[in-house]
Length: 414
Image (cartoon, rainbow, N blue to C red):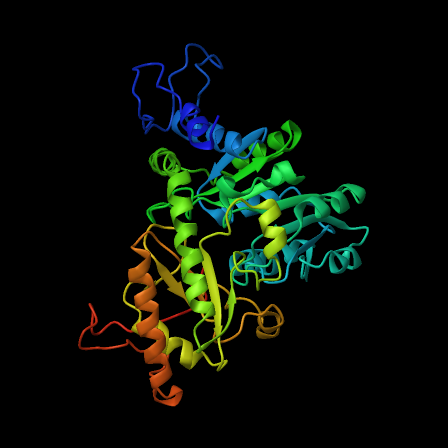
């Protein structure tokens, strides 16, 4: 059975009314027949019928024992870290998502949980970093934003040899392309905000556990800490997942064409995209992913944020915004946005230069997107960097929607 048919078959018809769409059970509590006797629901923080459909669906998509929906991707990450104890250590990807870095370094380090950051595409570095206290591998593959690829099968063997949990952030690949639990991972995390929901109208997170034992632990922390996803956002996410296969495939088809265009442009020094033979992880990505993905990053020959800003400001179809994975194309400057939290030395070591631009390729006509990039790159070549406006100013006060509102890029989230 195909992925799409299997997916739709696991979205149940409402047994009470026969509704073909998942009903929104917008209720905080449920009437009980007697104390402790109910129809499987007593309080919506603990369980809710709409959220339950989403959680069961996502567990099925990732081939896990249990799925758990949270109020944000960060809340999902937080639930996984709660599996650890004071004195435990984490080995994480070096070019880690800035929000995860902030959580590890600004929150959990205070409770005695230490994190080591290594290039996990090089398993030798991983093995050298392991200590007797290492309890969790935190992996993004592809990574954000340099799209490095980690060998999940090989890393899962290392994890098992040392009794270490392997958690994979599968946001970029989605279960359409990659199923980490099938490759040996213990836990999968998603920022549902991105491709799963897919329309830039939901903030949500997800954890899927491979075993029932891990599922019970995550379920406990979800209920005890309470950062659950509400019924309406659960409904929107289920509706988004119904078209995930077709959306994601189109995203990736567009991204492949755009990556090939960028690689041939004279202003571009390097393109980071696993679908290009020039990418170091090209072969491995082809083994463990069905699609190369829809995120592209690229560097300019002049490693200066001013040059990148000239290009970003002149894009019309790609909108400057946080996040990714929606149907509309977005652009960001990681050094000033998603990865500003990381120390500059770590950013540089991870390949996140001041001129690195990240694209989230949407579902506009791909030729229109290529033409947009072409005219912006041409503009970037013609503008002297020192004549560009500073980052805090609006690109054009006369034409900006809110002329008096400055454009401010700050430590952020996605």
